[in-house]
Image 1 (cartoon, rainbow, N blue to C red):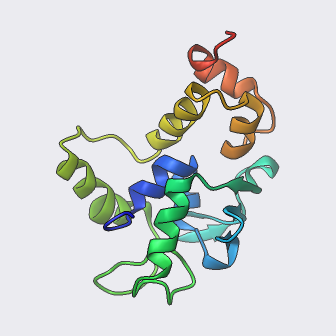
Image 2: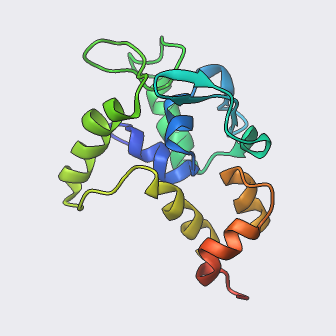
Length: 162
């Protein structure tokens, strides 16, 4: 079990965009079925519909993402509408800078990793899934792309046949 579930667990194991991570609502998670629905995105403090039609999607939860969500659900932070709340104020995060400052940056520092933007986790997730032999179209759908073109262009080196 994860000792202290954090933003980075879901960033690495879901492939969500930063605004999609900020917007995770408990009502959009199906923990028993290990699915999550991406229906909202938070940009500049405003909840919006995700950027494209393909971005509104249902993703399969990686076992480590599911474990993180279950752990958060069992914690004192599960009373909010959203998964991520500021532990100091118990208010929902509205800006990515808050998560970067209080969750992301400290996690990288503890791990001794040079700073990278949280968005880079999408690339890590995609390359991990492709390296494990996942179907490129499945990876594209998980990431919210309408076809595998972006996968081929950006991650072609991770595709066994390409």
